[in-house]
Amino acid sequence: MKILFSPSETKYQGGIESNFDKNSFIFPNLYKYREEIINIYNNYIAKSSNKQLSELFGTKKDNIIEYYKTDIYQKPILKTIQRYDGVAYDYLKYHLLKNDAQNYIDQNLLIFSNLFGPILAGDIGIPDYKLKQGQKIDNLNIEKFYKEHFSCELDNFLQDEDIIDLRAGFYEKFYTINKPYLTIKFLKNGKVVSHWAKAYRGVFVKHLAQNHIKSIDEVFDMNIENLYIKEIIKQKYKTQLIYEVK
Image (cartoon, rainbow, N blue to C red; front, top):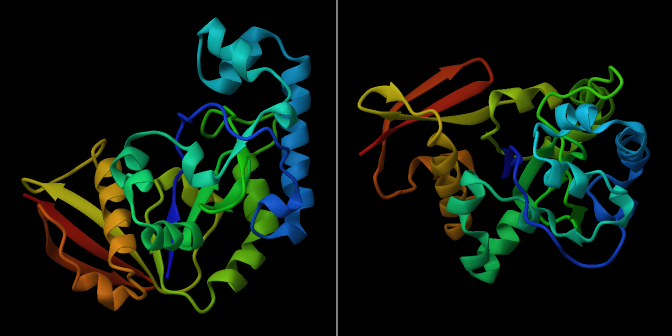
């Protein structure tokens, strides 16, 4: 079972005083492509004005711009899942899970980073970075770049796995799934849940980990408080599981 997941705009600061390298991430054979993007990002930061960085980072706050304009290679690192903050990660509550549930997430949650591309929750470490979703650097489309260079490797990695795709729509641009997979939609009073869908995705992943779910069939038997299955829709590769929020 592999779960495809979105990153978070907000991240925890600090970490271990160490540098990342090709062994810090899944797919070390493709590290040269990650490094290419990271170097472009780092060089752009070094040469750009605060106005340009405001657009890159998606903030007008001078203190945040000053914090993130430093050399990314000199920033401390944290395990991927411990770096990301935000609604989905708050409700996942990784730090409160038992070791076996944490190991499940480390090995099975695949996060699509705006800067680092597809990385595992348990990858050794990423620095605290900031890059606005969909932002180009010197006209480079980052999600297109990662799709071009990582799709074949992802196809192989996911070949024998059941897949649950919990990514926000934008992150589908990094990789197109070419086999049967499951998506989740949340409704409340018959209407699609928007912002709080992030929270329910976090809760959903937490239950996957706690129950050590290994297949899509097992998902249908999983009980989650305040959620019940309303409908299952199948079309081509995609099966959509629709939950009603009580």
